[in-house]
Image (cartoon, rainbow, N blue to C red; front, side, top):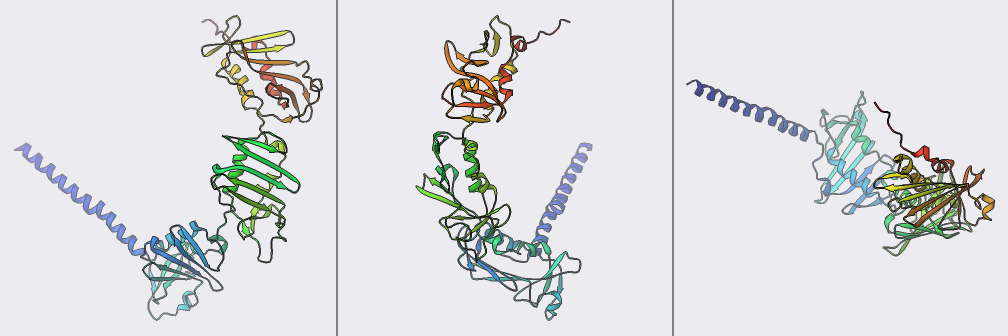
Length: 449
């Protein structure tokens, strides 16, 4: 009987728990949903909204939805729409909240700033329904706006944040994208400033400079440059009185021509004068608007050739390298790979991080200057290098690097690597990584306990 009594109590507990869950927790969720639904001022699916007008006392901005995520500004006409901004407006129309009713039919609307509303939001849906929500003055506490629908004189409160969401300018709602392009589709770039021209050509994953000289380009620089154009947005638009000639766009100060290999078409950005500090006029050659843009792109195209070129010191395959020889005068230090370790010629284990640092210096440091047509090697102290480094795989030489005299401008050391005639200026740190003695590399033996 005692067991039966315990079971009965357990059953009662479960029943009571279920009641609390459904009555309180689930019921609370349902009540919250009902309360939220009551707060919604507008009942419409944003996907069904086909037209939106923002009506201000002195002007109107209207847009019509032409297709999914495609809008057209109809008032004022002839201006491209920012599709994302118009979609956001449509999304926010049914999210507007209403709070307490403060006046019913027959109230003096002028007391609420609603006789001549500061803003009317008019939305039309595909079923022909028109919703006109009017926002008036703020309440004394500046927390709410007085609001009403056009077909009713009932005045209610709406959080001021909703009125501000619809306080959009034409600039906010128009297309501010400079060019429509995909960076991966661009296979050549030309930057033309007067008689000067920089030409780049994509080759696989690499970029090559074709003009004013033929050499490898810095692929990272080109990728960053193209991305800056893809994601650039206008900071503003030229005054209607400014034409192409006045903006320095006929002819342009600089033309950036990017060939889209996928579409077999050019994407062309024109750069003009500076209307104010750190701002420039710009234009997509295929569209009428004259943009005002920040200085980033115009400043990038002014950079010297050196900034665009590949500044890699040399190519060394550390996976293939199994021996390094460092020659300093008559002294030669030989480092050999043994499994995952590096050892001296007499078998002493070397500090892995110091040997790894040699590869890092060659792979990741960048030249401070490149001399493409050097004078005689003696001019740079490279006829008799003060230090030579030879990377080998077995008996085969993979790369050879020689360090010569000091460079004053820019500050560093002249370096010559196999693979071309160019002489480079590198930082002293690169030289110091190799200018070592064997005792500097040998791994120290822990003292006996």
